[in-house]
Amino acid sequence: MVSLKRLIGMARKWQIMAGIKRREISPPTDKMRHKVADKGHFVVYTIDKTRFVVPLTCLRNNVFRELLRMSEEHFGLPTDGPIILPCEAPFMEYVLSLELHHALQIVPSFDFGFGSNCLAHVSAPHALTLA
Image 1: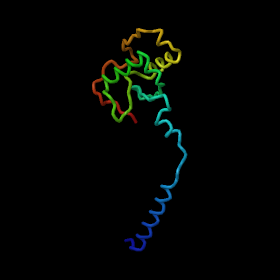
Image 2: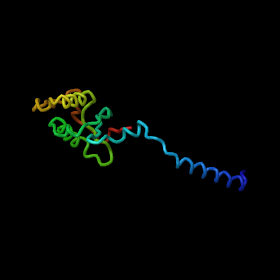
Image 3: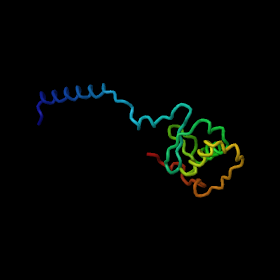
Image 4: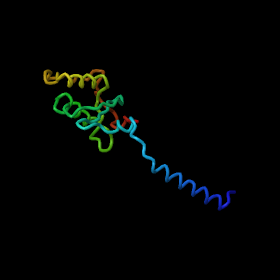
């Protein structure tokens, strides 16, 4: 059994250590920087949990707006969680590459035929969990 004097000493030591730890300010790490998108950008995830930082200019394009509309239908509007697009990473990379080359203005009717890269049906809206 630990004596009362020793217990009080241990408590004081822990309080001092806790106070020191609270005052330490560490520089932001890469992990912390990626939590929030830069100005003029927002973050979306695909169904395979790949993270994309997307420029706000993509919101002008019909293809990306259609992906957001489909996301709202399948997953609902996120309140605290991330925006999840109903496509896989290669398809999203393709859409972003089109945006970079301004090809979305050239292709007015984009085929959303739901190939292997897009989600055609979601059985459970909360089945996807992001780590």
